[in-house]
Amino acid sequence: MESAPAWPITIDDVRAARERLRGHLTPTPLRSYAALDTAVGNGIRVWVKHENHQPTGAFKVRNALAVLTSLPADALRRGVVAATRGNHGLGLAWAGARLGVPVTVCVPVGNNPEKNEDLRGLGAVLIEEGRDYDEAVAVADRMVAERGLTLVHSTNHPQIVAGAGTLTLEMLEQHPELEALVFAVGGGSQAVGGLTVVRGLGSRIPVYAVQAEAAGAIHDSWHAGRPLPRASADTFADGLATRNVYPFTFGALREGLAGFVAVSEGELAEATRLLIRTTHTLVEGAGAAGLAGLLRLRETLRGREAGIVISGGNVDEATLRRVLVREI
Image 1: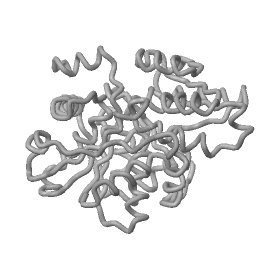
Image 2 (image 1 turned 120 degrees about the vertical axis):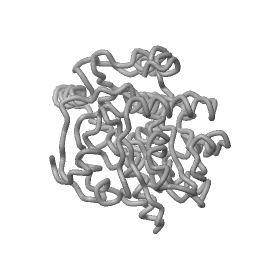
Image 3 (image 1 turned 135 degrees about the horizontal axis):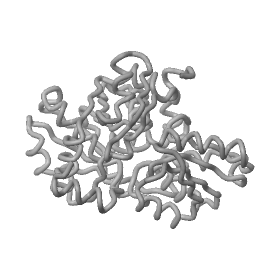
């Protein structure tokens, strides 16, 4: 794995990204729900950041806008390319449509059909190739070489992480009394963005991460202290379905996290059902991972005010049905 600085961005990068995003996005709600607090128990008050209320239904529109508003004009004219399971590509397609930038999106074969439909609807050129996200990344790299497009990697880019950090900046402004944060990890932009903000503000708030056991490369690597890529990443929470460790975020995760847990498919499904029942909003599997992690950390976080993020609500109908009838 290529080396990268342990701390790849600063809070000034996050603040600058937020200024560029102001004319495009409004702050998302941060809410608490009595029924959710009761279900979690242990005197924990849960604060939910509703990134499922973003224009694309997921936080990654922040990341995409942070990148496109920072690129030089010649790169914007040529266009950009990205690999995705959905939300990163949706954010990039939405931002490209808003800013007049051509966007090509590479997805694996068998990707969420509803996300594919939305990508095309936003005007992106869709390339379906590869068996998973990581193979789709290789396709995007090929597009860079063949067509001169600018790669917007979903994790290994400073503006991606800076854009993700803006959601934590909002959370701590909306509720300064937060005493812990739990972030889902697919590639790590959300968690490293959050860590950057907490560190930059001089806060002592502990930050925890959670990943799917079925796609636990970064979790396993964090505990081992070295990269341990996996051969597969088979989880219904497609936003977490990565099987590699990413150099831009791994060092900061190693240095900054207070803890890192992995959760089963059943725990992700139960957290999804609980959030739908208590918040009355749509939640995808990756969007429920923060709650699944918090439930694992109930003893550690007893009596605290804890922040989680519904990172996305873009679940397809077939998967949602399986979750609701407890087939997962």
